[in-house]
Every structure is written in structure tokens, then in C-alpha cells.
Amino acid sequence: MIASRLTRFVTSALVVPFLVVGCQVGQQSQVPDLSSNPSGPAAVRRAAESITAAGMRSRISFLASDELRGRETTSPGQETAAAYIVGEYTRLGLLPRGDSSSYIQRYPFVPRPMQVGPPMPVLAPNVVAVLPGSDPALRNEYVVLSAHMDHVGVGRPVRGDSIYNGADDNASGTAALLEVAQALSSLPIAPRRSILFLNVSGEEHGLLGSEAFTRNPTVPVSSIVADINVDMISRNSPDSIVVIGKEYSSLGELVNAVGAQHPEIRLTVSDDIWPEERFFFRSDHYNFARLEIPSLFFFAGVHNDYHQPSDEVSRIDPDKAARVARLIFYSVQEIANAPGRPKWNPAGLAEVRSMTRGR
Ligand SMILES: [Zn+2]
Image (cartoon, rainbow, N blue to C red; front, side, top):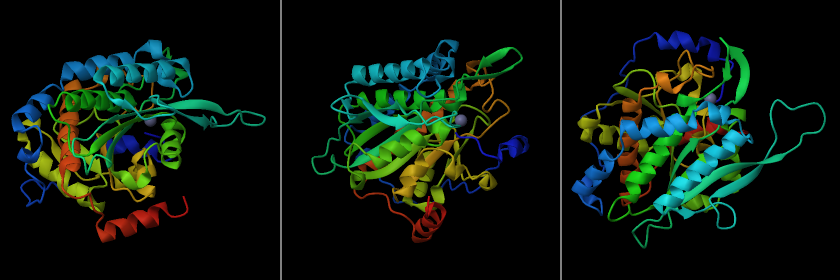
């Protein structure tokens, strides 16, 4: 999550109880029943249950360890994070979809704020991997699942700690992509459409990795049916998750219905309860929405440790993070198995166009 000049007001939002706004549990829905999954409901449930709090905690603990020194883009710690993700996708047998048959896409990164003198671009990594779809007609379409792996590195010490670990922001979303990738890979038959896992860098400098991917996509833009973005999912109310962008497309009804179909996940799917914070502009789904690709943003909200050295593993809720990852696992499958692509609501598309025009 990138900082905003509004961030100083953020703590006031925290003390407001988590309002259940726009909860549409029980609403009629055209979402296909889970039995339409090629693997069948029992296998899908087993795969979902393979996403655990212990798995999330272990992945977040590595990514947010002091050894990775806050994962600043182009730093050795950030490269270590990328190498770990590549290792996991390799182990799961996903296909590389970065540059020249590798999992890595490199893009020229100009650090901000710029130093004195001409900018010195260096190459920063995105990690790109694909689980091929099982349907011969639909496997050339992609559901993108994105999360940024970078954070803000080492900075001004606070109470003697200068490492900004970024456990919630965004080791939590990175871990969710890995757990969902593992769960989807375990299915006997893959979902119908392909799933593209995108771990970007440069997010904290202005969504630069996702901008680079959407400017130079490794699959055709027209083949991307949706972006599901995950950024900061392991804090705040244990029984709610905010999903930003629900009002713009059919993806909103889909995720509401998935939440209603899975009471065992114990998460209320909430609308954006902080519209004044303009979170729509502050994570990587924005670059997909700019291209008019229907998008959702899973986000549990900011907190007092946001962009502080105290965003540590000890403060996260790994059980909540695992349940959010299960909700994402089911949602991604519904999108991938649906007969048709997600559709914009006309008013939603008009609003997104007005928000992204000229940007
Ligand atoms: Zn951030």
C-alpha cells in the first residue's frame, strides 16, 4: 500500500468499529455452484483447507524477517524475496511467464525521490507464473492474482528499530498468493481458465512494478479477464475483510456470493468503508482498472504500525490472513470456471474511467 498525504488521518479511522456496510449475504446470485468445478467439491474443499494459519505465519515470518531488511525495491533483501517466490512456483510446477522463459520480468526502475544528478535506472524484478487452465477453449484467458512483494526497507529508527519489516504490508498478501498457488496446484483438475500469479516490486514507489507489467504484459491484455489484488490482509477485525471495487463490476456480486456460500470462513465481505482515503488509487489493481480490466482489491485496512518498523510478524493475525486467502482461493476459481468473463456495470465503468482519465 503506498502512502498518501491523507495517511495522517488514518488512525482516526481505526478506532471506528468495523462497520458491516453493504453486506449482501443471502442476496440472489448467478454465481455457478461449486459443483461446476472440474475437480468436484470434495477435492476443492480439501485444497482450501490446505491453506492454514501455520502456513501463512511461516511464509510471512520469512518475508518479514530482519534478514530481508524491509525488502526495498532493488535491494538484496527484495531480490531474496523474489528468489523465494520463484523457488515456490518452481516447486509447484507452475509455468514461468516472465522474460525469456524465466519467472522474472525486469523493468527499469528509477528510485523516488530522485537523487541529485541524472536518474540512474536499475532493473527491478516482477515474478510471473502461470497455472494453465484445463479447458481447451478458455485456457488462453487469464485471471491475474497480484500482490506486491516490496516494502520500504531501512529508514529512520523508531525506538531503536530501523528495519521496516512490512509483515502486513505486504508479506501477508505475498504469502496469500503462495498459499493459493499451492492449493490450486493440488487440485486433480485445474480451473478452466489459466491463473497468472504476479508478485510485483516498486509498489511503494508508486505502483511501478504493476505499471511495468501492464505496459509490457507477458500475456495479451485482451486475454486478462480480471485482476484480484491482495495488499495488507492480516490485521484489524478478525471477522471482516474489505473488498474495494465491488460496486464496479460483476466481481462484486461474485465475491459476496462466495462469502455467503462459505460461512465456515467466518468473514463478512464488506464494501469500502474508507472512501475518503482513496484506496482505489493506492495499490496495484489500479493499473489493471486503468486498462478497463475488472478488478477487486482485498484489504483489511491500515493500523498504527502502517509504514513503521513495528509492522512485525508478532502483530499479525495469521488465522485471519489464512481465511482471507481461502476466500480468495474460492473467488479466483469461480472467476476461472464461470462460462463468461466478468462484466463491468455501466455506471461502474463510467466512474472508473473518470477516475483514471489522463493518469
Ligand atoms: Zn505500503
